Image 1: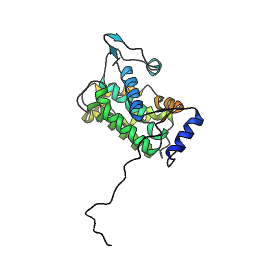
Image 2: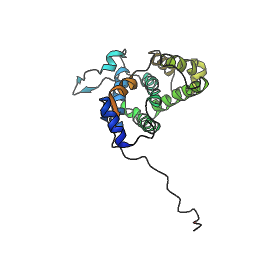
Image 3: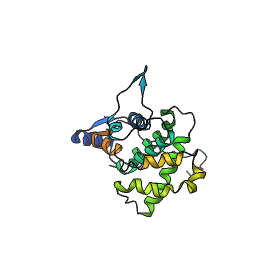
Image 4: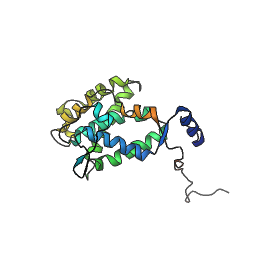
Length: 206
C-alpha cells in the first residue's frame, strides 16, 4: 500500500468492506485491551466495564502489573510494521509508546521504555533471520533474545519485571493487529505527512 493516494486508499477500503478508524482511536482501543489483560480492568463509578473480545481470548491477570503490560504490548505491537505501510506504522507505534504509560495510570515512561527495549531486541533477531520470523515463532524469538533473569537484570526496572515479561511473551502468536487489519483501514483523509523544506541558511546560487 505504500505510495497509494488518499482517494485510492478510500476506494480500496470500500471495496474490501472495511471501516475507517483514526490512528489515535485504534491506539486507544489497543492499549485498553492490553491493559484489561494485564489486570487494569476498566471501571466506571465502581461498575466494571465489559471485557473486550481480546481479553476474553487471553487469560487476564488478577492484579495489575505494568511489566506484564509492557511485555504484551511489545508482543502484539511487533506486528504493526508487517501489516501497515511504513508511514502509518511509524505513526501508530509512536502513539502507542507515547500513550501506554498513561493508559495504566503511570506518570513515568518505565513501561514504554521496557516495551521499546523488548521490541529492539526482536528487531535484532528479525535481522538475523532475514526478517522472516513466522508469527508462531515471534514470541519464542523474543523470549530467547530477552535472555536470562541474570543477564537482563541491568535493564529491568525491578526484580519482578523479567518474570512478568516472560509470562506475557508465553501467550504466543500475536493476534490483535492482525484481526484489526481484517476489518479496518486507517483514516483515508488523514493529513499529509510533514515534508522537509530548504533551510533559510542555505546559500542561494541564483
